[in-house]
Image 1: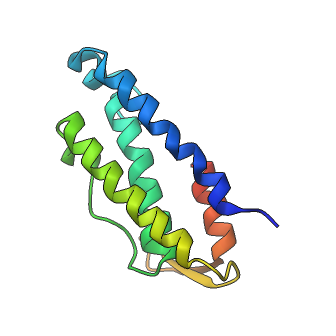
Image 2: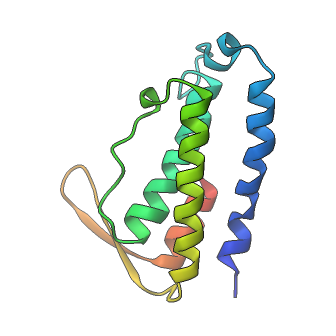
Length: 128
């Protein structure tokens, strides 16, 4: 059986990324690069929001999603603060996520609802 907590250990590498971000000029970190999310900052923040949404809202049953957007993060300090919050929630989540067959609901923008086993939600969050 997969150990999902081990799968998510790669998030510990965020410290190295933050260190790298601290060593590049802010204009490089925030420059529009024509990506699906404009800048390196926005791509990185998007991954945090995805983790927060899938693990702490959908899987934990706290609602559909956080209302945060990449634009809400103006500085590296904002990002570091959010990382601390998400990491703490992830740690609590894995301490309480015992039943991987538990059903998790997702409501789509058209109102359609789908139910997924928690194990599938974790696997999907890991891929994103």
